[in-house]
Length: 284
Ligand code: GUN
Image (cartoon, rainbow, N blue to C red):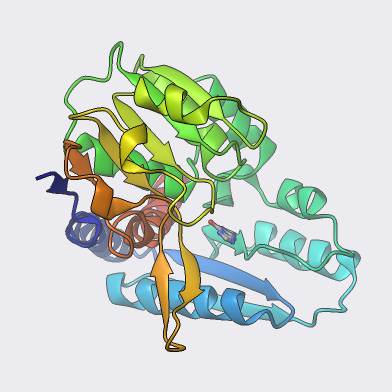
């Protein structure tokens, strides 16, 4: 039977630490503050933003929410970010993605001050990550490393296969693992013989957004599986549930597996809070 990596417990422990950091900053007269920007009325983004704000409150981080209409101009959004960059009371800025098609997301992310970029998406932070220097690291990859650290002592020489080459998960987690001297393979939609490649891995990180893509026979005995997928599916009886990228019920022979929900998901928000506290600390 494989170990179930409890993302909720690990996220709670991280948030407790963040809470302590916030407390110390408060004692020095600093109020860590996160500004969250939502453009348009995408229901899923609305849910994510509400969650982020309510989790901020739990650890004592002050949050500011700014909503812009879906038809706002790129210029209006860039101006808002400029104002937030200059406001010394704001330590972290997050623009919820995706943005409406008429807005150039790369240009928007580029406008956030790298020191306030708690998502770690600014090209300066991407560069810092790829050279192993001190920057703000994207939240989901950071959370994945913490989950892995609970079951791995030494990454040197381990074969890691990452399924999915996104800028938000696949590429940054590859950089973090290379820093630990793992041997990393990043696969994508055009990759051939994916099951064979996965079967050689000591660690598989599935971030393809394809429900139950990864089957039991893809995973070698005693491998570790991190499931980043979160897809809502509707059952025959009309009820909906969240499923991951892995057929978890076929993974009893793995060493450890993250559940969905309750694995990577809780870590992403906990890392956002931790990044915000860290940005406030560095600013101080
Ligand atoms: N949309 C989906 N995931 C994310 C994320 O990690 N950060 C932001 N800003 N938007 C997202």
